[in-house]
Amino acid sequence: MIGDKNMINWSSDFATGVNIIDEQHKELFRIGNELSLMVVKTRNQDSSEQIKEKITELMAYTRYHFSTEEKLFIIYNYKFSEEHKLQHQDFIEYMNSFEFSNNVNEQLLNIKRLVNYIAKWIFTHIHDSDMKFVTTLSDKNIKELSN
Picture 1 (cartoon, rainbow, N blue to C red):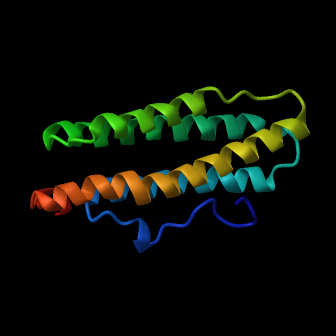
Picture 2 (cartoon, rainbow, N blue to C red):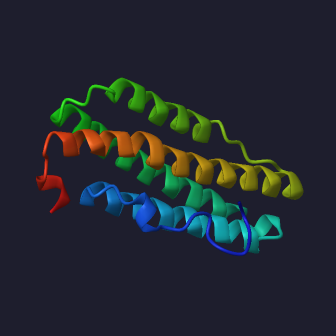
């Protein structure tokens, strides 16, 4: 998935119709794309500290976003919340397990794998789990989140 362009591009296919979720997803895409571009452009150890900082930023915002979604689960009594929260937890655990290598080539390969994992996970999670959640909101005629 890593090439000369973004990790994953925002399109209307990712829009849930819930503004707070869509805006946070766009921010996750922005951070993820910055990380992806850093990886594409780096060829040496000198960039590793910047990449680490970007991964840290992505993790912090991801936690914030997951917290927002999980609060909505409670507010709207989402019946599949435990399953959805487990997916969030698995993603965080995967990200936390990432380790940097002292070998530049190995490190770049590991980071590329991480970025590919993130891109695939985001794509699948939004299209499956998040859409399932917002469909439940729509079924309950909850409109205030979309304004």
